[in-house]
Amino acid sequence: NLRYLALESMCLLATSEFSHEAVKKHQETVINALKSERDVSVRQRAVDLLYAMCDRSNAQDIVQ
View (tube, one colour):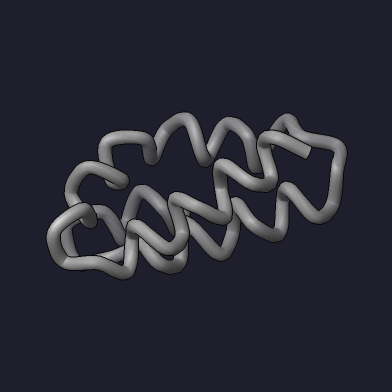
């Protein structure tokens, strides 16, 4: 599944200090995918990505 692979790649990028901010720009898209996706594996990968991109500046938005 292409969505799963994209989220997995973004998870890897989110752990890098050089690309962390670039991944955070897609936070709303990831949250929307988490809410609307029916595939459990894609939703799990979206949760993993949100965890990887979470920091003090966006923790409140992610938890809501």
